[in-house]
Length: 354
Image (cartoon, rainbow, N blue to C red):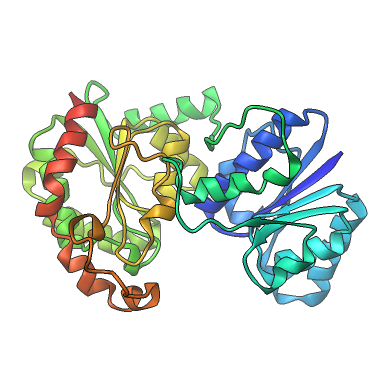
């Protein structure tokens, strides 16, 4: 049997959809299970033995109709028995259609849905602590009637050699390994997903003031100017605990550095999802325009805690569209003052640092 899973999206999505591959492998250990993803997301799949082949969707496939068709025909030539499309956009629908697979599965969500042999309900509200991002993906397995226990947890795999290299980096930067280390997800993937820098500075000062810890910032190299602003604005006593230059050169190194940390706090995004896949406690601050129900996965209030503006003002965002919230994200973020967060964050820190 040959099965293809499609997830052309970013890191968090690719990691979440990898649970499809994991559970398929558990049920069909002799099947060939392939995963179609963007090239830049592959570091989160390294070491995953549930995936036989990673098929890359590259920029050339988007820019060139000829290259796209070549990819689709290559997939068709593989003769997959089952294709599971977790993306459901024009590109993935065309690939699925051209694949010739007898069983094709996706969501009953838009115009393209009729092209699939099996359409599953696209849930709009979570039923469990797993969250919508996980529940929706697991629903794609329903048409297969799997008779094995489903494991909903995404996983990252790190070798002993990689762990040692990360430990050596800590030594190189003179990190005090006698103290616990907190990673700060300092900046979101875009400004509309980034907690205001002055607010974040206040949060970091709070974390540092009452805890004997190391602090590592997580940010992309292109975001260094904003990261520097936050560092410069921190109190002198906080700066002494921050290892500003300890940063991975690539995504894989970042993952291994995260594995050396004890917990992560900050903006929602790929870093938070990777931390959960490493079984690290997480405290997540959601952007007001993002639906917390979708990506607040495995939130139990203890190991994983997430906060959103509507937690404090439940009626404020009623009848305000996601588009409108994003347009006015600066206003809504301004209402999510650090003082609102202090109590729950302090409780989280007391659990995991003491």
